[in-house]
Amino acid sequence: MSDIKKFMYLNRRAPYGTIYAWESLEVVLIGAAFDQEVSLMFADDGVYQLVKGSDTSESDMKNFMPTYRTLGDYGCRHMYVDKASLEARGLTQDDLIEVAWEDFETEEEVDNIVEIVDTDQVAKLMAESEVVFSF
Image (tube, rainbow, N blue to C red; front, side, top):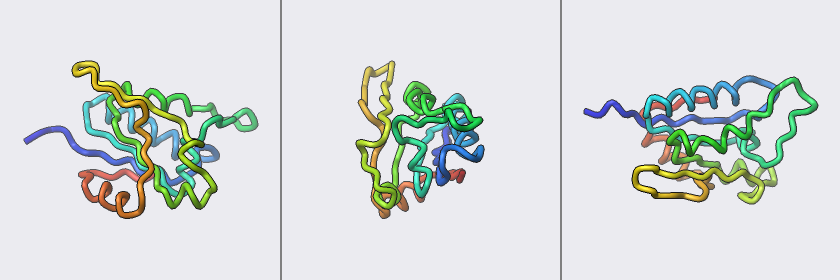
């Protein structure tokens, strides 16, 4: 039996104003550091966590958006965005950051692991996960 678990991190809150998004990112990095299979799902106001050009200068919070771009380096291969949540906020894939991924052993590369998924795919991906953390 493998010790590797499939973790899904569900991000449903806006990136700033609370610590939920930051806490999620920290837990994702910990899971990835321990070689677990980590995926992220962004839904509801969580989609704002991936919007390009976030500006935190008017808040007391540090802009942690650049950390998302490094997740591919930590072995995170899947970042999903709920299509309905994105559309409800007037956003498209073009509004989101891109996150590259590369397997240094096989040299396989993916230019952008941020994928828009519909409601059925969201349910399927959540069901396939062994552990779901909601933030």
